[in-house]
Image (cartoon, rainbow, N blue to C red; front, side):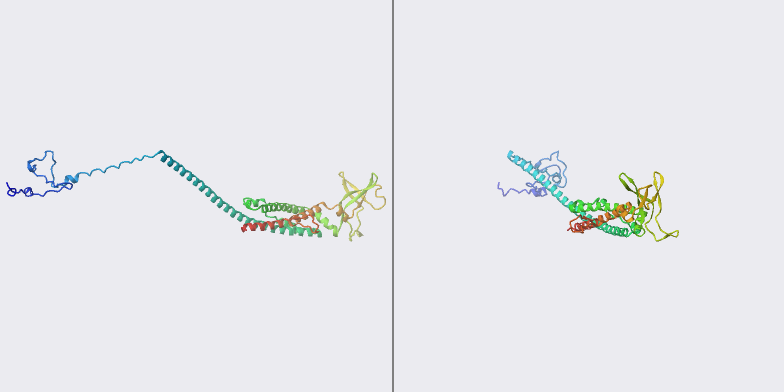
Length: 370
């Protein structure tokens, strides 16, 4: 039979539906409702009921899991491993050196900062000490002026009452305590020696000032007696002549009640004369000595001969007065120093005032950072 005469079967028309194209293969006809398939093949009894959506079973299925990456194993030779360890140790060594260098640099920076702070503190302390030393030197100069006035009054035979009072309020305000808690270690040796010397001289001058004030206050009567020798000289000493081992000799004896060497006043209408006798304590008893008038001074009972006042002071000066005069001179020398006025290279000493001025100028230089 000829193929053209055979009737064509339109499967699409028979099925009444369009074929569904599978996204991954050839077109698959949709399932036949009623449990039959084309060609009389029954639907499998285990088939699940179909919905109207032919893609529901495909959309509900989970996507296949992604393939796991496979580990890649690299084989390294012993030489490579050894070189890696070597480089690792080298890295540790570099890190350690870097850390040490960092610590050293930090220490140096910190030390430099600390040094700078110490220098600032030293400059500050130098400025403060310069003011304190200057004040002390000014006070020492005031004290020296008072001491000079006392010296002049004593020489003129006047009791220095007002000056003695001034001594009570003059003390040099500088001592070793002024150097405490100060950064004097950064000063040069010359400045340190000057400070220590100045502190020592100040303390000695203060002690001498206190001692002089006490001596002057406690020796008022002795000073008045000594001063009276110029205008109204009195006899304080006598010599008692007696027989000695090889002839007459004199023994010094103080007069219990000194009497005037001379006087223009009248006594009971008569001219003034020395006493005929004096009484002296000897062995707890009053012993009377007659004044020598004529004859052998060594003959008979002991007799006293008055000693001329001026010779008395030159040979046997009043001990209290001599001590005061000496104390005044020593204090003035300590304050103003000792100068050789003869030009023969004699003894010289730098005084407290000059020492203080010099130290103060050096401290000002340190304070200014010069």
